[in-house]
Image (cartoon, rainbow, N blue to C red):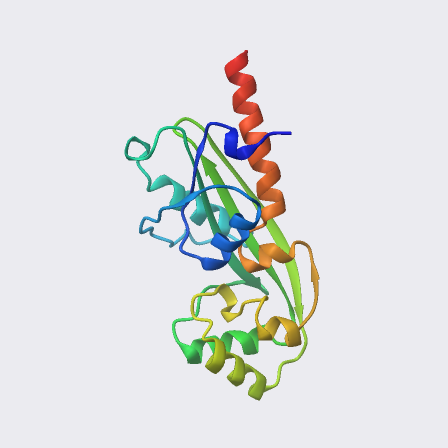
Length: 204
């Protein structure tokens, strides 16, 4: 077993998301939070997880490793909602949030998270997709949720761990935590493999 906290790496999570902070903390990993402004636009033609991978990579590439602590292992992530061939991002205001939830109502959508692991000389990325099925939501339910929870910082205008997830989500196929914003089980396994490969290469 690899003890990540004694692997010699200084872990940095490049995310402002309180859900990602919480989820990564629950794995027992010691990490610092550093965030740099990133252009999150992406080329036309990308679909679903390709968008999440592209943006998560862009978030990693804005960091200058000469300005980071020695042996930094940077973790970046981007989560998008994909519905019927369309990327649903974060709402710009409450009206936009209501429109998004009305689109998701009664349908299946895919939550895709792209994750990047970067050191000064290595780069690795992966993605996780989860299918989420919403029952048909009433207009009053959408209004109540948006007014009370103000989900303007969330892709698709909802947090599965909030009221709307309890009453509106019929089922989930895949990682629940991915829908929250970070596929922590996969991330934990990928970190172990990433560090194991580096250790092996250095030993050869």
